[in-house]
Length: 467
Image (cartoon, rainbow, N blue to C red; front, side, top):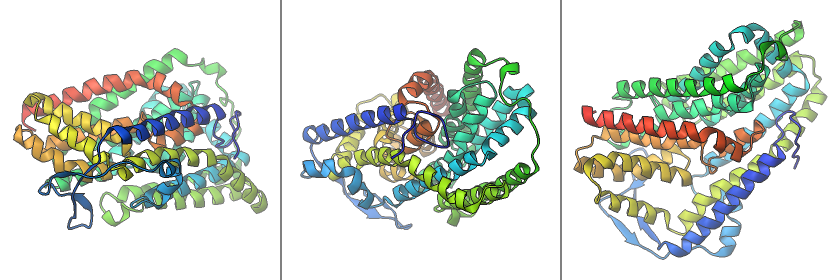
Protein backbone atom coordinates (compact mmCIF):
# COMPACT_ATOMS: atom_id res chain seq x y z
CA UNK A 1 0.00 0.00 0.00
CA UNK A 2 1.57 3.24 -1.16
CA UNK A 3 0.54 6.39 0.68
CA UNK A 4 2.51 9.52 -0.02
CA UNK A 5 2.31 13.14 0.90
CA UNK A 6 3.75 14.46 -2.33
CA UNK A 7 1.36 15.05 -5.17
CA UNK A 8 2.29 12.59 -7.93
CA UNK A 9 -0.08 10.64 -10.11
CA UNK A 10 -3.05 9.59 -8.05
CA UNK A 11 -1.35 8.66 -4.79
CA UNK A 12 -3.79 8.95 -1.89
CA UNK A 13 -2.60 11.57 0.55
CA UNK A 14 -1.70 10.01 3.93
CA UNK A 15 -3.49 12.62 6.04
CA UNK A 16 -6.65 12.40 3.93
CA UNK A 17 -6.60 8.61 4.15
CA UNK A 18 -6.11 8.51 7.93
CA UNK A 19 -8.76 11.17 8.59
CA UNK A 20 -11.37 9.47 6.42
CA UNK A 21 -10.57 6.03 7.82
CA UNK A 22 -10.91 7.19 11.44
CA UNK A 23 -14.23 8.93 10.70
CA UNK A 24 -15.64 5.89 8.92
CA UNK A 25 -14.51 3.51 11.67
CA UNK A 26 -16.23 5.69 14.29
CA UNK A 27 -19.41 5.53 12.18
CA UNK A 28 -19.03 1.76 11.97
CA UNK A 29 -18.87 1.55 15.77
CA UNK A 30 -21.87 3.86 16.20
CA UNK A 31 -23.83 1.68 13.78
CA UNK A 32 -22.89 -1.43 15.73
CA UNK A 33 -24.09 0.20 18.97
CA UNK A 34 -27.40 1.04 17.27
CA UNK A 35 -27.98 -2.67 16.65
CA UNK A 36 -28.32 -3.07 20.44
CA UNK A 37 -30.65 -0.08 20.84
CA UNK A 38 -33.00 -0.43 17.87
CA UNK A 39 -35.28 -3.50 17.66
CA UNK A 40 -35.25 -5.60 14.52
CA UNK A 41 -38.02 -5.24 11.98
CA UNK A 42 -38.72 -5.60 8.30
CA UNK A 43 -41.11 -4.81 5.48
CA UNK A 44 -42.19 -7.57 3.14
CA UNK A 45 -40.76 -7.30 -0.36
CA UNK A 46 -42.23 -8.24 -3.72
CA UNK A 47 -40.71 -8.42 -7.19
CA UNK A 48 -42.13 -5.86 -9.61
CA UNK A 49 -42.59 -6.23 -13.37
CA UNK A 50 -38.99 -5.16 -14.02
CA UNK A 51 -37.59 -7.75 -11.62
CA UNK A 52 -36.76 -5.25 -8.87
CA UNK A 53 -37.37 -5.89 -5.18
CA UNK A 54 -39.76 -3.27 -3.74
CA UNK A 55 -41.62 -2.89 -0.46
CA UNK A 56 -45.08 -4.44 -0.36
CA UNK A 57 -47.05 -1.76 1.50
CA UNK A 58 -50.11 -4.02 1.72
CA UNK A 59 -48.24 -6.50 3.94
CA UNK A 60 -47.09 -3.78 6.33
CA UNK A 61 -44.24 -3.86 8.83
CA UNK A 62 -43.45 -6.63 11.31
CA UNK A 63 -41.00 -7.06 14.17
CA UNK A 64 -38.25 -9.67 13.80
CA UNK A 65 -35.21 -10.71 15.79
CA UNK A 66 -32.41 -8.17 15.34
CA UNK A 67 -28.72 -7.94 16.10
CA UNK A 68 -25.51 -9.00 14.36
CA UNK A 69 -22.66 -11.17 15.72
CA UNK A 70 -19.50 -9.26 16.64
CA UNK A 71 -17.36 -11.33 14.27
CA UNK A 72 -19.68 -10.48 11.41
CA UNK A 73 -19.44 -6.77 12.18
CA UNK A 74 -15.62 -6.90 12.33
CA UNK A 75 -15.47 -8.71 8.98
CA UNK A 76 -18.24 -6.62 7.40
CA UNK A 77 -15.85 -4.68 5.08
CA UNK A 78 -14.97 -8.04 3.50
CA UNK A 79 -18.38 -9.73 3.77
CA UNK A 80 -20.02 -6.78 2.00
CA UNK A 81 -18.41 -7.97 -1.25
CA UNK A 82 -20.59 -11.06 -1.20
CA UNK A 83 -23.80 -9.31 -0.16
CA UNK A 84 -26.80 -9.35 -2.46
CA UNK A 85 -26.88 -6.51 -4.99
CA UNK A 86 -23.29 -5.41 -4.44
CA UNK A 87 -22.11 -6.09 -7.97
CA UNK A 88 -21.98 -2.31 -8.46
CA UNK A 89 -19.56 -2.06 -5.51
CA UNK A 90 -17.13 -4.44 -7.20
CA UNK A 91 -17.51 -2.44 -10.43
CA UNK A 92 -16.60 0.78 -8.57
CA UNK A 93 -13.47 -0.84 -7.13
CA UNK A 94 -12.29 -2.07 -10.54
CA UNK A 95 -13.14 1.33 -11.99
CA UNK A 96 -10.97 3.02 -9.37
CA UNK A 97 -7.98 0.76 -10.03
CA UNK A 98 -8.17 1.52 -13.76
CA UNK A 99 -8.25 5.27 -13.02
CA UNK A 100 -5.19 5.00 -10.78
CA UNK A 101 -3.17 3.13 -13.38
CA UNK A 102 -4.10 5.38 -16.28
CA UNK A 103 -3.51 8.69 -14.49
CA UNK A 104 -0.12 7.62 -13.19
CA UNK A 105 0.92 6.74 -16.74
CA UNK A 106 -0.38 10.05 -18.10
CA UNK A 107 1.50 11.89 -15.36
CA UNK A 108 4.81 10.05 -15.86
CA UNK A 109 4.84 10.57 -19.64
CA UNK A 110 4.31 14.32 -19.13
CA UNK A 111 1.00 14.47 -20.95
CA UNK A 112 -0.94 15.78 -17.94
CA UNK A 113 1.43 18.68 -17.39
CA UNK A 114 1.46 19.47 -21.12
CA UNK A 115 -2.35 19.45 -21.31
CA UNK A 116 -2.66 21.77 -18.31
CA UNK A 117 -0.10 24.14 -19.74
CA UNK A 118 -1.94 24.25 -23.04
CA UNK A 119 -5.30 24.99 -21.42
CA UNK A 120 -3.81 27.60 -19.10
CA UNK A 121 -2.08 29.45 -21.92
CA UNK A 122 -5.33 29.48 -23.89
CA UNK A 123 -7.81 30.44 -21.13
CA UNK A 124 -5.63 32.10 -18.48
CA UNK A 125 -6.96 35.55 -19.33
CA UNK A 126 -10.61 34.43 -19.12
CA UNK A 127 -10.40 31.90 -16.32
CA UNK A 128 -13.72 32.79 -14.69
CA UNK A 129 -15.53 32.19 -17.96
CA UNK A 130 -13.81 28.81 -18.09
CA UNK A 131 -14.91 28.16 -14.50
CA UNK A 132 -18.53 28.82 -15.46
CA UNK A 133 -18.32 26.48 -18.48
CA UNK A 134 -16.60 23.64 -16.61
CA UNK A 135 -19.09 23.89 -13.73
CA UNK A 136 -22.01 23.89 -16.18
CA UNK A 137 -20.60 20.84 -17.99
CA UNK A 138 -20.36 18.79 -14.80
CA UNK A 139 -23.79 19.86 -13.58
CA UNK A 140 -25.26 18.91 -16.96
CA UNK A 141 -23.57 15.48 -16.87
CA UNK A 142 -25.16 14.79 -13.49
CA UNK A 143 -28.57 16.24 -14.31
CA UNK A 144 -29.17 14.92 -17.82
CA UNK A 145 -27.54 11.48 -17.78
CA UNK A 146 -27.11 10.74 -14.07
CA UNK A 147 -23.31 10.52 -14.23
CA UNK A 148 -21.58 10.52 -10.87
CA UNK A 149 -19.02 7.74 -10.42
CA UNK A 150 -18.25 7.99 -14.13
CA UNK A 151 -16.81 11.50 -13.70
CA UNK A 152 -14.23 10.57 -11.07
CA UNK A 153 -11.44 10.34 -13.72
CA UNK A 154 -12.05 13.99 -14.60
CA UNK A 155 -11.87 15.33 -11.03
CA UNK A 156 -8.04 15.23 -10.72
CA UNK A 157 -7.76 16.92 -14.13
CA UNK A 158 -10.01 19.79 -13.03
CA UNK A 159 -8.18 20.07 -9.69
CA UNK A 160 -4.83 20.33 -11.49
CA UNK A 161 -6.37 22.83 -13.91
CA UNK A 162 -7.69 24.99 -11.06
CA UNK A 163 -4.26 25.06 -9.42
CA UNK A 164 -2.60 25.96 -12.73
CA UNK A 165 -5.05 28.86 -13.13
CA UNK A 166 -4.10 30.33 -9.78
CA UNK A 167 -6.76 28.80 -7.52
CA UNK A 168 -6.49 25.72 -5.27
CA UNK A 169 -7.59 22.09 -5.01
CA UNK A 170 -10.83 22.99 -3.21
CA UNK A 171 -11.86 25.18 -6.14
CA UNK A 172 -11.16 22.31 -8.53
CA UNK A 173 -13.19 19.81 -6.51
CA UNK A 174 -15.99 22.38 -6.31
CA UNK A 175 -15.98 22.89 -10.09
CA UNK A 176 -16.15 19.15 -10.72
CA UNK A 177 -17.39 16.91 -7.90
CA UNK A 178 -19.58 19.47 -6.14
CA UNK A 179 -21.00 20.56 -9.49
CA UNK A 180 -21.87 17.04 -10.56
CA UNK A 181 -23.50 16.38 -7.18
CA UNK A 182 -25.65 19.49 -7.64
CA UNK A 183 -26.59 18.46 -11.16
CA UNK A 184 -27.37 14.92 -10.02
CA UNK A 185 -29.74 16.35 -7.39
CA UNK A 186 -31.43 18.80 -9.79
CA UNK A 187 -32.16 15.70 -11.87
CA UNK A 188 -33.71 17.17 -15.01
CA UNK A 189 -33.44 13.78 -16.76
CA UNK A 190 -31.51 11.74 -14.21
CA UNK A 191 -32.50 8.13 -15.01
CA UNK A 192 -31.15 6.72 -11.74
CA UNK A 193 -33.13 8.93 -9.35
CA UNK A 194 -35.91 10.82 -11.13
CA UNK A 195 -36.49 8.14 -13.77
CA UNK A 196 -36.72 5.24 -11.29
CA UNK A 197 -38.68 7.27 -8.71
CA UNK A 198 -41.25 8.40 -11.29
CA UNK A 199 -41.79 4.87 -12.54
CA UNK A 200 -42.36 3.65 -8.97
CA UNK A 201 -44.76 6.56 -8.37
CA UNK A 202 -46.74 5.72 -11.52
CA UNK A 203 -45.69 8.89 -13.39
CA UNK A 204 -44.51 9.21 -17.00
CA UNK A 205 -40.71 9.07 -17.09
CA UNK A 206 -39.12 12.56 -16.96
CA UNK A 207 -42.51 14.29 -16.81
CA UNK A 208 -42.71 17.65 -14.99
CA UNK A 209 -39.28 18.58 -16.33
CA UNK A 210 -39.89 22.33 -16.32
CA UNK A 211 -39.84 22.64 -12.54
CA UNK A 212 -36.63 20.60 -12.22
CA UNK A 213 -35.06 22.76 -14.95
CA UNK A 214 -35.95 25.83 -12.89
CA UNK A 215 -34.27 24.23 -9.88
CA UNK A 216 -31.21 23.45 -12.01
CA UNK A 217 -30.80 27.12 -12.98
CA UNK A 218 -31.24 28.35 -9.39
CA UNK A 219 -28.75 25.83 -8.02
CA UNK A 220 -26.23 26.54 -10.81
CA UNK A 221 -26.38 30.26 -10.03
CA UNK A 222 -25.89 29.63 -6.31
CA UNK A 223 -22.93 27.29 -6.91
CA UNK A 224 -21.24 29.66 -9.36
CA UNK A 225 -21.54 32.60 -6.95
CA UNK A 226 -20.08 30.45 -4.16
CA UNK A 227 -17.14 29.28 -6.29
CA UNK A 228 -16.34 32.74 -7.70
CA UNK A 229 -16.49 34.36 -4.26
CA UNK A 230 -14.02 31.82 -2.86
CA UNK A 231 -11.74 31.88 -5.91
CA UNK A 232 -11.54 35.68 -5.85
CA UNK A 233 -10.33 35.53 -2.24
CA UNK A 234 -7.55 33.00 -2.75
CA UNK A 235 -6.48 33.50 -6.38
CA UNK A 236 -2.86 34.17 -7.25
CA UNK A 237 -2.06 37.06 -9.61
CA UNK A 238 -2.11 35.86 -13.19
CA UNK A 239 1.53 36.75 -13.78
CA UNK A 240 2.58 34.22 -11.12
CA UNK A 241 0.49 31.37 -12.47
CA UNK A 242 2.63 28.51 -13.67
CA UNK A 243 2.21 27.42 -17.25
CA UNK A 244 1.48 30.79 -18.88
CA UNK A 245 4.58 30.39 -21.08
CA UNK A 246 3.98 27.34 -23.20
CA UNK A 247 5.90 25.49 -25.91
CA UNK A 248 4.14 23.28 -28.46
CA UNK A 249 5.13 19.60 -28.82
CA UNK A 250 3.82 17.63 -31.80
CA UNK A 251 3.99 14.21 -30.12
CA UNK A 252 2.17 15.52 -27.08
CA UNK A 253 -0.45 17.16 -29.29
CA UNK A 254 -1.05 13.82 -31.02
CA UNK A 255 -1.38 12.15 -27.63
CA UNK A 256 -3.89 14.77 -26.48
CA UNK A 257 -5.95 14.35 -29.66
CA UNK A 258 -6.06 10.57 -29.15
CA UNK A 259 -6.96 10.92 -25.47
CA UNK A 260 -9.69 13.53 -26.05
CA UNK A 261 -11.16 11.63 -29.00
CA UNK A 262 -11.48 8.29 -27.23
CA UNK A 263 -12.76 9.81 -23.97
CA UNK A 264 -15.16 11.92 -26.05
CA UNK A 265 -16.62 8.78 -27.61
CA UNK A 266 -17.13 7.39 -24.10
CA UNK A 267 -18.92 10.57 -23.01
CA UNK A 268 -21.16 10.42 -26.09
CA UNK A 269 -22.07 6.83 -25.23
CA UNK A 270 -22.93 7.88 -21.68
CA UNK A 271 -25.05 10.74 -23.02
CA UNK A 272 -26.84 8.36 -25.37
CA UNK A 273 -27.86 6.23 -22.38
CA UNK A 274 -30.71 8.70 -21.84
CA UNK A 275 -32.29 7.36 -25.03
CA UNK A 276 -30.80 3.84 -25.12
CA UNK A 277 -31.88 2.46 -21.75
CA UNK A 278 -29.88 -0.73 -22.24
CA UNK A 279 -26.71 1.32 -21.75
CA UNK A 280 -27.74 2.69 -18.35
CA UNK A 281 -26.55 -0.37 -16.44
CA UNK A 282 -23.11 -0.39 -18.09
CA UNK A 283 -22.14 3.29 -18.22
CA UNK A 284 -19.41 2.80 -15.63
CA UNK A 285 -17.97 -0.10 -17.61
CA UNK A 286 -18.08 1.99 -20.78
CA UNK A 287 -16.22 4.87 -19.14
CA UNK A 288 -13.63 2.53 -17.59
CA UNK A 289 -12.92 0.76 -20.91
CA UNK A 290 -12.78 3.99 -22.93
CA UNK A 291 -10.61 5.70 -20.32
CA UNK A 292 -8.24 2.72 -20.23
CA UNK A 293 -8.01 2.69 -24.03
CA UNK A 294 -7.50 6.48 -24.13
CA UNK A 295 -4.72 6.34 -21.55
CA UNK A 296 -2.84 3.49 -23.25
CA UNK A 297 -3.05 4.98 -26.75
CA UNK A 298 -2.22 8.53 -25.61
CA UNK A 299 0.85 7.54 -23.60
CA UNK A 300 2.23 5.35 -26.38
CA UNK A 301 1.68 8.07 -28.99
CA UNK A 302 3.33 10.61 -26.68
CA UNK A 303 6.53 8.58 -26.66
CA UNK A 304 6.33 6.26 -23.63
CA UNK A 305 7.48 2.69 -24.28
CA UNK A 306 5.23 -0.29 -23.64
CA UNK A 307 7.45 -1.64 -20.85
CA UNK A 308 7.48 1.63 -18.93
CA UNK A 309 3.74 2.00 -19.50
CA UNK A 310 3.15 -1.37 -17.81
CA UNK A 311 5.30 -0.42 -14.82
CA UNK A 312 3.74 3.00 -14.32
CA UNK A 313 0.24 1.55 -14.71
CA UNK A 314 0.94 -1.02 -11.99
CA UNK A 315 2.42 1.65 -9.68
CA UNK A 316 -0.69 3.80 -10.17
CA UNK A 317 -2.96 0.86 -9.47
CA UNK A 318 -1.14 0.11 -6.20
CA UNK A 319 -1.22 3.78 -5.17
CA UNK A 320 -5.04 3.86 -4.96
CA UNK A 321 -5.43 0.70 -2.86
CA UNK A 322 -6.06 2.81 0.30
CA UNK A 323 -9.22 4.13 -1.37
CA UNK A 324 -10.41 0.54 -1.83
CA UNK A 325 -10.23 0.01 1.93
CA UNK A 326 -12.16 3.24 2.59
CA UNK A 327 -14.90 2.22 0.17
CA UNK A 328 -15.29 -1.24 1.73
CA UNK A 329 -15.49 0.26 5.23
CA UNK A 330 -18.08 2.84 4.13
CA UNK A 331 -20.27 0.20 2.49
CA UNK A 332 -20.06 -2.04 5.56
CA UNK A 333 -22.30 0.43 7.46
CA UNK A 334 -25.34 -0.38 5.33
CA UNK A 335 -24.42 -4.07 5.43
CA UNK A 336 -24.46 -4.03 9.26
CA UNK A 337 -27.87 -2.33 9.38
CA UNK A 338 -29.40 -4.75 6.89
CA UNK A 339 -27.97 -7.83 8.61
CA UNK A 340 -29.19 -6.55 12.01
CA UNK A 341 -32.67 -5.78 10.55
CA UNK A 342 -32.67 -2.20 11.88
CA UNK A 343 -32.77 -0.30 8.57
CA UNK A 344 -36.45 -1.02 8.00
CA UNK A 345 -37.19 -0.23 11.65
CA UNK A 346 -35.70 3.25 11.27
CA UNK A 347 -37.66 3.77 8.06
CA UNK A 348 -40.89 2.59 9.68
CA UNK A 349 -40.40 5.02 12.56
CA UNK A 350 -39.91 7.89 10.10
CA UNK A 351 -43.13 7.02 8.23
CA UNK A 352 -45.06 6.82 11.50
CA UNK A 353 -43.74 10.24 12.57
CA UNK A 354 -45.09 11.82 9.39
CA UNK A 355 -48.65 11.45 10.64
CA UNK A 356 -47.91 13.76 13.56
CA UNK A 357 -46.83 16.69 11.37
CA UNK A 358 -48.85 19.57 9.90
CA UNK A 359 -49.45 19.15 6.17
CA UNK A 360 -47.11 21.89 4.99
CA UNK A 361 -44.18 20.29 6.81
CA UNK A 362 -44.63 16.85 5.28
CA UNK A 363 -42.73 17.70 2.08
CA UNK A 364 -39.78 18.92 4.16
CA UNK A 365 -39.95 15.79 6.29
CA UNK A 366 -39.79 13.65 3.15
CA UNK A 367 -36.72 15.65 2.12
CA UNK A 368 -35.21 14.99 5.56
CA UNK A 369 -35.97 11.25 5.48
CA UNK A 370 -34.17 10.88 2.15
CA UNK A 371 -31.24 12.92 3.47
CA UNK A 372 -30.93 10.61 6.48
CA UNK A 373 -31.29 7.41 4.46
CA UNK A 374 -28.69 8.62 1.96
CA UNK A 375 -26.12 8.46 4.75
CA UNK A 376 -26.58 4.70 4.88
CA UNK A 377 -27.54 3.96 1.25
CA UNK A 378 -25.61 6.10 -1.25
CA UNK A 379 -27.21 4.43 -4.29
CA UNK A 380 -30.04 6.61 -5.63
CA UNK A 381 -31.93 3.83 -7.41
CA UNK A 382 -31.66 1.51 -4.38
CA UNK A 383 -33.16 4.23 -2.17
CA UNK A 384 -35.94 4.82 -4.68
CA UNK A 385 -37.04 1.18 -4.48
CA UNK A 386 -36.90 1.38 -0.69
CA UNK A 387 -38.59 4.76 -0.10
CA UNK A 388 -40.93 5.68 -2.94
CA UNK A 389 -43.56 2.96 -2.22
CA UNK A 390 -43.81 4.38 1.33
CA UNK A 391 -43.57 8.15 0.96
CA UNK A 392 -45.87 8.64 -2.05
CA UNK A 393 -49.02 7.22 -0.36
CA UNK A 394 -48.26 9.21 2.80
CA UNK A 395 -47.79 12.42 0.80
CA UNK A 396 -51.06 11.96 -1.07
CA UNK A 397 -52.96 11.86 2.23
CA UNK A 398 -51.79 15.45 2.77
CA UNK A 399 -52.57 16.55 -0.79
CA UNK A 400 -48.92 16.53 -1.94
CA UNK A 401 -48.41 15.30 -5.49
CA UNK A 402 -46.19 12.36 -6.40
CA UNK A 403 -44.34 14.70 -8.76
CA UNK A 404 -43.22 16.94 -5.90
CA UNK A 405 -42.24 13.87 -3.89
CA UNK A 406 -39.90 12.91 -6.72
CA UNK A 407 -38.25 16.36 -6.58
CA UNK A 408 -37.85 16.10 -2.78
CA UNK A 409 -36.38 12.61 -3.25
CA UNK A 410 -33.87 13.85 -5.87
CA UNK A 411 -32.84 16.77 -3.66
CA UNK A 412 -32.37 14.53 -0.63
CA UNK A 413 -30.36 11.99 -2.60
CA UNK A 414 -28.02 14.20 -4.61
CA UNK A 415 -26.54 17.04 -2.58
CA UNK A 416 -25.48 14.97 0.40
CA UNK A 417 -23.57 12.59 -1.91
CA UNK A 418 -20.79 15.17 -1.86
CA UNK A 419 -20.93 15.70 1.91
CA UNK A 420 -21.40 12.35 3.66
CA UNK A 421 -18.24 10.33 4.44
CA UNK A 422 -20.13 7.12 3.62
CA UNK A 423 -20.18 7.98 -0.09
CA UNK A 424 -17.27 6.21 -1.82
CA UNK A 425 -17.10 8.68 -4.73
CA UNK A 426 -16.51 11.57 -2.31
CA UNK A 427 -13.79 9.65 -0.47
CA UNK A 428 -12.06 8.71 -3.72
CA UNK A 429 -12.18 12.21 -5.14
CA UNK A 430 -10.95 13.92 -1.97
CA UNK A 431 -8.10 11.45 -1.68
CA UNK A 432 -7.06 11.99 -5.28
CA UNK A 433 -7.33 15.77 -4.89
CA UNK A 434 -5.17 15.78 -1.73
CA UNK A 435 -8.01 17.29 0.33
CA UNK A 436 -8.82 15.91 3.78
CA UNK A 437 -12.46 15.20 4.64
CA UNK A 438 -12.33 17.67 7.54
CA UNK A 439 -11.05 20.41 5.26
CA UNK A 440 -13.80 19.63 2.73
CA UNK A 441 -16.53 19.86 5.38
CA UNK A 442 -15.15 23.14 6.69
CA UNK A 443 -15.12 24.55 3.15
CA UNK A 444 -18.40 23.22 1.78
CA UNK A 445 -20.81 23.31 4.74
CA UNK A 446 -21.83 26.92 4.09
CA UNK A 447 -22.81 26.09 0.54
CA UNK A 448 -24.68 23.00 1.74
CA UNK A 449 -26.65 25.10 4.24
CA UNK A 450 -27.47 27.79 1.67
CA UNK A 451 -28.47 25.09 -0.76
CA UNK A 452 -30.65 23.39 1.85
CA UNK A 453 -32.54 26.65 2.42
CA UNK A 454 -32.79 27.33 -1.32
CA UNK A 455 -34.09 23.87 -2.21
CA UNK A 456 -36.55 23.90 0.70
CA UNK A 457 -37.96 27.15 -0.66
CA UNK A 458 -38.21 25.56 -4.10
CA UNK A 459 -40.27 22.73 -2.58
CA UNK A 460 -42.59 25.28 -0.94
CA UNK A 461 -42.94 27.06 -4.29
CA UNK A 462 -43.85 23.76 -5.94
CA UNK A 463 -46.35 23.01 -3.18
CA UNK A 464 -48.01 26.41 -3.45
CA UNK A 465 -48.26 26.08 -7.25
CA UNK A 466 -49.80 22.61 -7.01
CA UNK A 467 -46.89 21.07 -8.93
